[in-house]
Image 1 (spheres, helix red, strand yellow):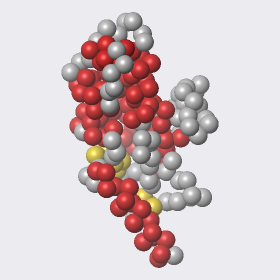
Image 2 (tube, one colour):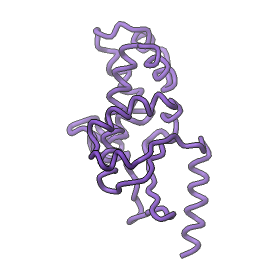
Image 3 (cartoon, one colour):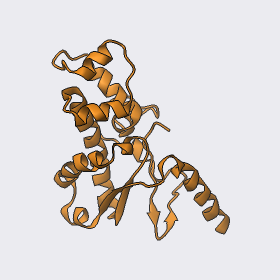
Length: 182
């Protein structure tokens, strides 16, 4: 999908809670932020999902201080995708850099909070936004260092998922397998 999801694996099993454990996209990252599809405000998903990044880009493009190729594309009504925004950020486009900074800060703050709750061994980033690859890790690491409880940060490994678009199907199959054991 186009949102921000999550899964919490503990002792080799997916935690389900009451059915919505791992819905990290609906953790608040900005008080009084954008209205989310869930009805709440400021959810991580409103900033760090593909949809959120596109909305931020369009909103920031209206600001005249951004006189960049990406801003001109957006003002001209041209369609852009997250890959083109990430590529523009890598190339030094100020609008794209600003969007990605805000988006990745929201995601990093969410992950920082999760490290305090779960003290995980590993955080694996996947989905469309994770296609940004090492850029994503390089940009998020300083933010995580700034906001994460130091002992937890030293212990956690952050990596990129290897399953690509098949991750959802594989996860669903594993969930069925887990439930059938019960």
